[in-house]
Each structure stands twice: as structure tokens, then as C-alpha cells.
Image: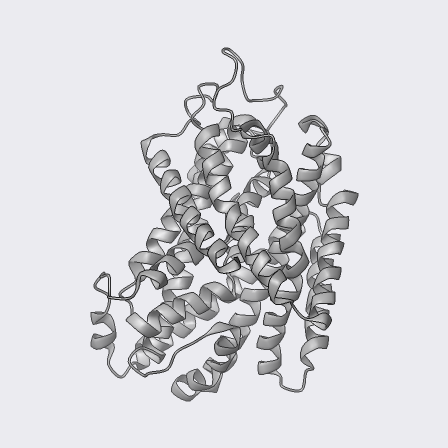
Length: 435
């Protein structure tokens, strides 16, 4: 059962602790942005590239509005996750427990299933990009090395180190895709024709593609993890609310610009050509026609971007898995928030054990393969995270015990309700495929 109210006069915030206040100047605030860039690096993966390129292949730039809708909905969801942390001082899993006692257990099981396949799936994709770039490299061995490297980055590094690494990933893939988009616009044979597809429309037979674009842009578990990265930055005072919102806005501006540039590349290369792209193999195969159109340097840049996109998602995913599983376990054990640090910090044994477990599972999947039933289960439980999260946030952030500055306003309620319905429909469709 989900509890909507709390006893009158109580507060959701734990006993106050000393927390630094946010800078008062805009420049001072901008220098502290970081969790949003981590989110952009972690949540934009090869799947976003495939979805954006596929949409552009079929409809040119006509469905950019769907990508924009997806960015707006997920930015509202992320902002609510960050706002819940600032409002209560608690972790996202502890907050979910106050909405429904079964939610931490559900999240633990969901993320545990994801952890079994995540490393193997993404390391194989990253290895595909790297072995296409350097054909002499063996695919399976390369995937194992990538898994071990990603595990090590998360295992040995505290948050500051992790944030720096992820910032490099986002810089490389951002510069790479922007460079390719600019080259495509400059060399396009029919630039007016490409730009003419910009008019927003709802083409016949495009509903499934539109839903995939809206639901696919950005991450799922990474959104839930945003509050942990905010927590690591010591953003715990109400004065950090504008900084957190600027951080989220920056994250999704970068995300939208990336998928916009990917769509431009897809529209210029694929739209009207009769060529399509399906899956990660199709993504790697796109390098050769891109090189034929724009030159060998563009081919290398595309494959390097593809590699760093996937590597960033893999490293960020391992970090998210560590936080969500260790915090879920802590919450289920009844350990209070005041003692949370030593049970879920990146240096804690539960966090590191779960990261090592995800890495080991990734190596195993690389050699043993991915059973179809497990892949479908992975996709299904992953689809449940966002509807549960958005539904819980609607409950938690509308409580009268939440300070008015943090409580949902009309726009937040509309967007979170839209997220709940949208991701609920996508989850139902995924369940239908499973059964």
C-alpha cells in the first residue's frame, strides 16, 4: 500500500546536520555543476544512438519534437529526484520506503536482475565499436578488458575521481557527435531538403517510433542515482535548489544536443536512401558509409564516439548499480540514514561487492552468452523502474509535510503524471512481449 499522508506536524527531514550553503553568485554556482554531466554521460548510450538514427532514417528531422518531449519529461523526473533529496535529506530508496514499504525490495530485485546482464551487454557493444576501429583485436577478450576496466574505475575511485572520468567521456562524445553533425550539414548534397523535414508532424505508422524516441532518450536507473551524486557533492541545504535545477537543465541540454546531432547525421546519411539501422551491429556498420560520404577521419570519429558513448554508460551504470543495491540493502536492514555513509559510500564493502558482482556477471555473460529469457526479463524489470519512481515522487512531493519550496507545483505534477502514464504504457508493452 502507498501511504499518502503523514501525521500532522511531523516532517520528512531527519535531524538537521551542518551542510554548506550554495554560492550566491551565478558564476560560483556554475563552477559547482557536475552530477548532471555524470548523468548525461551515464544515461546516453548506444540505444539512444540507434533510436535517434532509426527515427531520422525513416522520417528525417520530423520527429525531433518527440526527442524534445522525452528530454522534458525525464528532466522533470530527475529534478524531482534531486528535489526530494534536498527536501528530506534522505536517500532516494529511503524516500521510496516512506511511500511504500515494498518499494525498496522491488528496486533491489529489479536492479539485481539488471546487474546480471548490464556489464556483458554494454561491454560487448563497446568492444564491437573498438574492434571495428581496430579489426585485429579479438571481440570477446576486448569485451572482458573493457568490463574489468569499467569495474576498476568505479571500485577504486571516490566520487570526485568518478566525476572527472565521466566528464571526459561526455566531452569526447559531445565533441565527436557535434563535429560529425557539422560536417554532415556542410557537405550535404541537399541541405534545404534535409531542413525541410524539420516541420513537426505525426507521420502515419510512426506511433511506435515516437514512443521509443520519447521513452528511450536518457536513462532509467541513472535517474534514480542522481540523488546519490547530489549527495556526494554535499548539496543538502535548501539554498542548493537553484544549483540543482541548473545542473539538471545542463544535463538535459547536453543530452538533447547530442541526440539532435545524431539525428542530423542520420537524416543526412540515411533518410531517403532506403538504408535502415537495426541494433548495435547496424550502428557499427554505419561507419563505412559515413566514411565514404565524409572521409576516413569521420569514420574514425564516429567509431571513437560510439565507443566512448558506450563506455560512459557502462561505467555510470556500474556506479548506479553499486549505489542502488547497497542503499536498498541498507534500507531493508533498517539501518538509519544517519549511518548510511558507511553502508553505501563508494568505499564501503557493500557498494564494492555489488560492483564486483556486476563486473563478474558481465565477464560471465560475455563467454556464456545471453539467454533469451533472461534478456526479456532484464528489459521488463528495467521498464518498471521509471513508472514506479514517477508514481512515488507524485506521492512524496505532494505531502503537506514537505516544505512549500520543495513541494510539487502544477507543472511538476503534470509532467510527473505524464511520465507515470508514458512509462507505464511502455512497461505494459514490454510485459506483453515477455508473456
